[in-house]
Image (cartoon, rainbow, N blue to C red; front, side):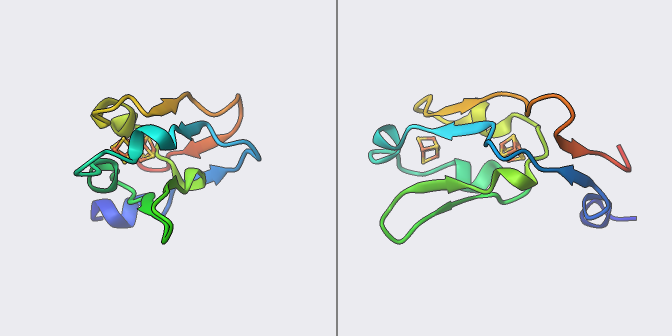
Length: 90
Ligand code: SF4
Ligand code: SF4
């Protein structure tokens, strides 16, 4: 089974509150916006009005975005207990 196929088997228990916060004032001068490229789930995007957003509900909890952001604009923590990703195939 390919990695992409394995990822589709994961189960997500959604919390109403995002475990990822982005400081938009720091993103404004960020180029390139590496969060777009490093997230293995492709959850980051830029809105039409230039805001950086993340679809936290699909987060794999790898922490890559937090480490890679050159501005320290991402506040990241694990979802509250019982929520978040449940891996089916490691
Ligand atoms: S890499 Fe960090 S500073 Fe740059 S757009 Fe993404 S969250 Fe904002
Ligand atoms: S922790 Fe990993 S999967 Fe979650 S948003 Fe950051 S890079 Fe994407």
